[in-house]
View 1 (cartoon, rainbow, N blue to C red):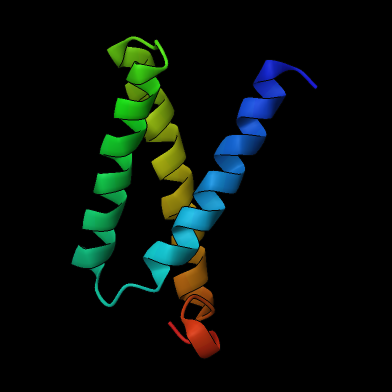
View 2: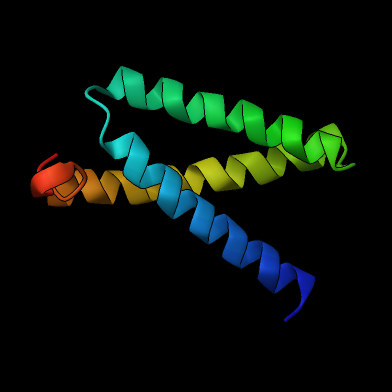
Length: 86
């Protein structure tokens, strides 16, 4: 598996895990704050691994964008909260 494929899988896994957690929060504001905090953490982590700021931000943007799309779908289906309700 190439490094690009590994990164793609890691981003997809991360986005899925974070979206499930975010969708269980009680309000849009709480979900937004949660995702913003993860974005900041991703940028900081990528910078510690040697990425320049623009690369780190692009990576974090992609991860959070994916999480937002999954979260919206979970909320629309009503499957985000424990017991199957959003």
